[in-house]
Length: 472
Ligand SMILES: Cc1cc2nc3c(=O)[nH]c(=O)nc-3n(C[C@H](O)[C@H](O)[C@H](O)COP(=O)(O)OP(=O)(O)OC[C@H]3O[C@@H](n4cnc5c(N)ncnc54)[C@H](O)[C@@H]3O)c2cc1C
Image 1 (tube, rainbow, N blue to C red):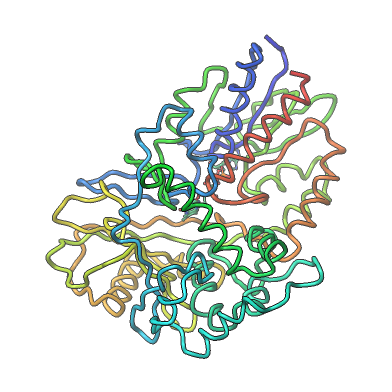
Image 2 (cartoon, protein in one colour):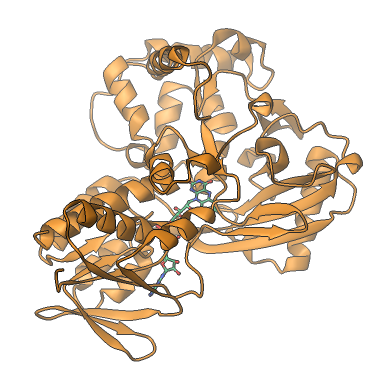
């Protein structure tokens, strides 16, 4: 057993995945390690929060992970949770976009924002004829010469045109990342698209090649094992809970807020309650602005860089209704709302359509998204006004006039990191500065991907770096 002390700050999925990977690798090497994980809240999981009430399963934060990014699924398998992985109900695999007050189906074959099938796009009444022609011209637009970063708006406008940006790309990133496409870095958020342009000269060609590859892989078995979005039958909180159950060399201390970190020969971790603890290595799995404040005593320029990563606040509002009281067929996973529609929600998921086991058979569950970089003020409405606002939006958009059976509001203040243009360059400067402080590691959604799966991947990499640093 090594006598080196490892401290992890933050008990969200990033901190937990780091702890689990540290143990996994140490066990393989026959090493025994000692980890202490501090979490300021009285529960672990960070943004992952599942509530069960009256037969409903409500996700307050994330509700799924992308199977294309395999690290979450792989971790679930390793944790013995393979049986708990839940597919989407693909008979409802449709997304709608609000246009002039009406919901229009996103044409079949549009993946993220790239059309891969011609006929559904031609038939669609979401995009005008000139918009469709402009999207099709993507095939012939030469690739960008320079490798400089650009905003998502610049990228989509250049390749697919303004209409694809306004009606598909912008609502998608507002709904998923709560981000502003005018400032969002395409290189950091959608590196795959940048690579596709580079490799195939066209996003459409790249996406079609990828689909063909997936079909080929799928045709070997019958239906692919995973759908594009996956979740857990008992809710995503099952994942942090199972990690904790499987940790054997980690002491998890909740209700312990770290107040500062100092570096002498070793690290000194000061807690808000006055305790001070020594550590040989520290992993900060906290939001970047929190890490910035913890590091002020060590290096102000690192803190200044970390503070350059802006954050947006959002809220999710879940409402349950009696099925019979809703005439809207809800034939899909939900809808997104472009900014031009000037509504006060950015989208909604028809939860009980998207996944099974989310509501009793005679009820439906709808989850709406509020806030993001353009409408942050709405996140802080009081509960009553917030519910009235959401009910009003659902009445106008979906024709729902009945009273909900239950409502739940989850506010997420400064929870969505914004990867703005130049994010990647700032990270490389940060890495250089951090190399002057061996033993100090940063992980989490602020840096190299903010989906659950990417946080897990980054936690795993961080664990490898920590053990290398400790010569284990
Ligand atoms: C509303 C919403 C919906 C989302 N939907 C999806 C989705 O569907 N799919 C997806 O893949 N991702 C989604 N995400 C993103 C994903 O949930 C997060 O990126 C991910 O959970 C972040 O994990 P983390 O561990 O890096 O950070 P966090 O979850 O923020 O964890 C950080 C932890 O550090 C603790 N902490 C902070 N300061 C201190 C301190 N000083 N001392 C001790 N502890 C401290 C915090 O209390 C927290 O528990 C969503 C996020 C939100 C907010």
